[in-house]
Figure 1 (tube, one colour):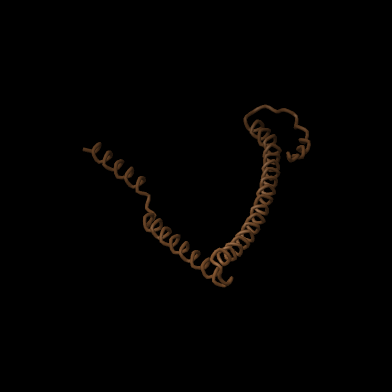
Figure 2 (cartoon, one colour; figure 1 turned 45 degrees about the horizontal axis):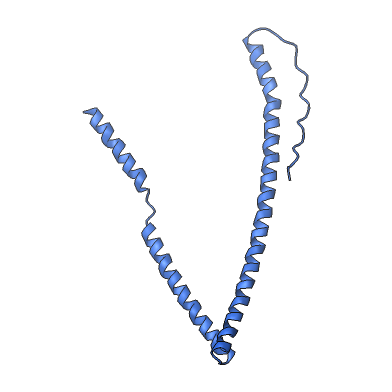
Amino acid sequence: MATQIPPPPPSPPLPPPREGVGPAVQEISYRAQPLVREEIELAKAEITAKVSTLAKGIAVGVAGGIFGVVALLFFLHGLSFGFSAWLSVDPWVGYWITTAILFVLAAIAAFLARRFVMKGSPPKPEMAIDEAQRIKRTVDEARR
């Protein structure tokens, strides 16, 4: 759906032409003002349209996230009852098995997250530092 941008307001009438640099600068300034106003209005209209689209996307994303969490809860309930039926035990045993599996998955995720964070810490722009040192060496060599 394309957003309609309102047409710009009509420009004011031009003053009569005069000669010289001063009047030319004044005329350029006089003509530039409506252009700047129109550009500002166009930018406002574009930003409004983009913010509206972003807001809709965020709202749909949040709704999808909520549906996903609810679906995960139902899946985990079904998994728990599936364990209890498969092993012919009470439902609470199935819930304990599901809980144990979730704790194992959480521990694995925490371990991997720690490794990734430690590998990336401290966040230092090594390539930029190397480049700056090379530039410094080149400048120092050029001075000799």
